[in-house]
Image (cartoon, rainbow, N blue to C red; front, side):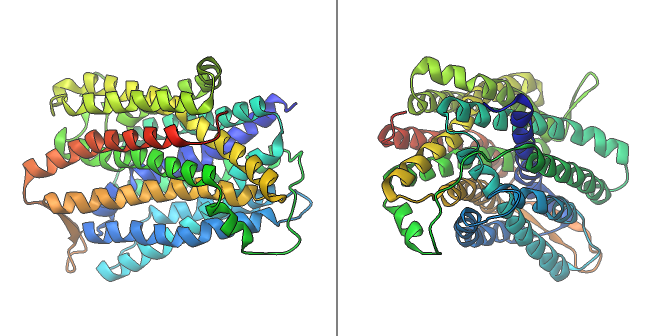
Length: 447
């Protein structure tokens, strides 16, 4: 039986990866690249799309490599221990705006973003795979997964809530503010990742293949539960990705900037913080909810239904700062569903890994969990790319002036852009959640 300290240590891993690096990349990067860094809307969309195609190769390769790692620290833990510093450093550099022209900035952004995807994969795929070797008890797997989600959402809450106040404290230009915040959060991400690697324990030995083979890759696509669960994971991250990527634009253009209520500054990060807090609470409730419903699959489906209903409701709230608390309330209700189903995905991947081991005779835990990370990055970044493309179609134009090196943003059709932003936060995620429910209905593992 794992100690509480180990569960907290495991939670720190996703507090660093999910609560800091990935949360900032999902929410702040689209707006940062177009409105602060100075990339065109087309470059921003292309950057995220190329990174995803890159991950199609690196994620499964990393999973297979992690499965074959043997060291004094175990199979998966060394990747966290030695990947912690590169993760924080590259993240910090991504939020720094160099004094280059348009071409130099494009090279900087593309190079560092791809490097970030590689190091994130090298840390997060082994991190997720650890769940398959830390315990054989199904209920304890749910507990570890729940701690993971609570850690991610708790740190996400702190990160997003603190952004506008830290920006105010740092002062100066927006470029300077983002650079300082990048360094600060990069250090926190390094510490959390390293702590996770040192505080956890691998109790089970993976059944290793004797030599490298492409057979496990082929086995994946003959594994029906894996195929369906990966599609569910992609939909889940599409749902989150659209909302996160467009939140900054929602406040910048639909709400006409930050909304001040008393001493509370509600900007796009604080707005999403209400959801993070709710997800943290209901992520902790998820094992109890699942036990009450009866199976992970059914619990996931009911949680997704909540997301469908509340996302549609958001669309009908007026686009006006006067309705900010109603908008916050709907986001909280949507986050109840997200919080309930988020831990279940990783616990279900552990079920799929067990199924694959029984069927094929060797462990492919890292390879299977890598698909969860790939689904996370694919769904989040493709949705971010599509947000940029849709906004461009609606009339959003951005770029860097080659003479002054200043960021320029032009809105050719304000009404169309605002309507597109509103739909990207509500109706489109609702459609994705309906697809997710359909996939859950045919998912074959009934645990």
